[in-house]
Image (tube, rainbow, N blue to C red):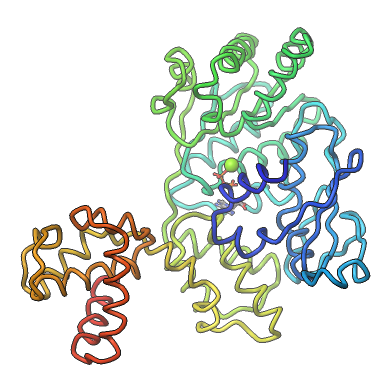
Length: 454
Ligand code: ADP
Ligand code: MG
């Protein structure tokens, strides 16, 4: 149902993106193969349509595979006249509204609705920017995609953190194979979908057919294999599929969020098989690569933006590529909405939450240490029960900085300060806020500490 899909969207795209774009999607109805959903403004509707509709449709399709179309309508939040303002535009008719976002979107599941998950047309090798952190994975993916009659490594196992390009590379392999070796039967799907298909086959006593379908492909790609860790019967079936394909010398490509040996909940024999071929990891991005990716987006979309904005984003949004792209999109959407060019100030304003979340490199321990040094108290006093002003005030300052410079919650901060209650932290924040109005010296101390810590 929609609630579960919302949850998946939030975990896939992160809180910031979810809150900016996806939070306001409302579910209306399911009518046969079509799901109807609404968004409060035309702008949001177009944005979601261009950027997230495909994924949302995939999620619906995974829930119920008879669903092939997802329709977004505009329904203003003001419920009183909501009905009359409705514009009904199906996915297919809606035009691309946003400049620079010209990617075509597959509106319905590809012709083989039974197995293959649709490939995102944007995820090609041409659109993949290569840097030190992903060159091995990229080269291996290319090799597999270009192999005609040989199987260079089996399996190819790609792994890395979220949003670093694993799915992109797999889709790119799919596109390249379709172009280079159209006779090959290629199957791409997530491990989740594999499990879903398998469970269905079990329920409908159709496992023979299931086995035939999977064992007759030339290239099998399974994305996010960690999903089936701990799912024993699915794992068992996957193991047999895997062996059958390897025996026939058919290419298997797998992605996961960690190395085969670190896949907890995965049977030992499966883990060892996964490491048989080539294991290529994708490391976190470096500054050069992030800048390169932003520049490539800007070029593709023919977007006008000052280079220093891109540099700023590449410096500050370090978590992963998905978030980096999301940040750029948000900045552009904002500038489009208000009709003004992007400035550094507007960028900082629009991305406040994201920038803060990306600053989580600073730990509470570091803050405590800096503050203790600065006020010349002992580190242990950050945790102690002493209430003397000389230690209590610096401790409050440290809590205040922890709140402003990290994304920790109040209870988490309390715990790091000798197991204090979240209300104590709240009190400290309020106190320091008040003091900052009156006590110029303290206020400057805090500014100084912030600058040193950042
Ligand atoms: P993962 O599957 O590893 O979580 P994705 O492949 O979904 O990550 O990538 C997230 C987003 O970042 C996608 O929009 C993808 O196109 C983009 N991306 C990731 N790496 C690169 C890269 N090297 N060059 C261009 N785009 C990239
Ligand atoms: Mg992925």
